[in-house]
Image (tube, rainbow, N blue to C red; front, side, top):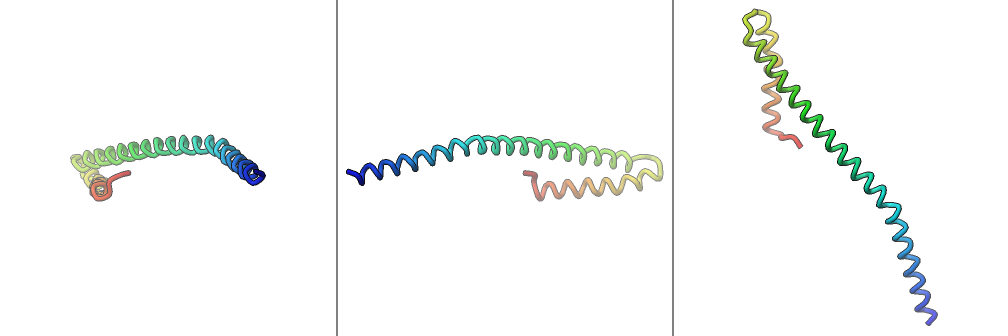
Length: 96
């Protein structure tokens, strides 16, 4: 009978230890998940902003390249080339 009470006591101690760990772990896990969601949302915002930047750079390059002024066509070549290269990269390696 003594053996049974010792094993019951041990089971209660182990159960208490697990409950204690879970009580302390759960808030930290929730905070980690919440921080991960915020990070992911910020990352998606940065991706959207960079796409808008690349698109506007492409428009600027296209307008500068189509301009009638002699110097503007030279200025428009480099950004246009960068815009085209970025679009090819985006097709090869889609964003996350």
